[in-house]
Length: 393
Image (tube, rainbow, N blue to C red):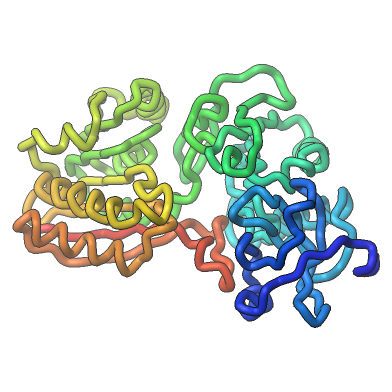
């Protein structure tokens, strides 16, 4: 299809080098007037003031991120294009990881499909359409998923707050398959649960897989393990598999703790764990017991840029209290999934936490999101997960 077939939006000069360099977002203040007349989800061509093309993408004039580039070529963005991109994403996973039956198949911008997330958990596939452009493509997405993973239960987990920013309805529905509540799957020799209809995000955090394996390498038989913000208990169960004597799961959600208990029992770890329902921020203030190993995996504390400094202080205080719960010589495994917090600033917060806790701390190892969540070089925003192993004295 020629470029003449597309309506055009004009890029301001200040944004040209960033977009030319491969960034897929164009903000509303980076476009010349006229883009406000387009319909949300419409496909447009992006050009500069000299008429040079930067590709085509979906537009939402009511969103801060007004255009999301889908192709650098001026080609039709329809069913065939989408299916080809989905096939490419799946094929790339076979090189990145050893088990495509349980992985993130599509990671939005990193797979050049802005606004689309697809996670597979053996017989259950969960997807999120987070933008207006991807919302319009949902029928084609579901068609490909149903064809490619025949017999798989498909869940549309479209209740993210990002959809509100796009002006979309938030909902979570089962698209195909017999009605389910939760589903078991296997990973790294463990039976794990995904909670696709009532859980967080897609129902299980696949992005921490490599970090869980890294954590296991430091577990010694007989260790006690504190799993804070445990959700369905993956870090704690991996620790039990590696030889931990006892895990204490702490979370503010009763449902999450029930999942952690079910997963522990299903893997034969009966009587080797305890469940505590509490606000972790408050609970940890009052505790005096120390553990050989402590894991802390809080939710994203920086929801927007204006909250970044407040979030850094929260990470500092939370980690300072967690450090106090580590026996001398023990280890702290700590995470941040706040994409708006840089790796450097987060590490500085951990250093401040060591000072505040009056403990001597040294960094042992660092991690990031698993390979099925690749980082697009031109978009630092696609790197969000930070993980560190610290020894505390």
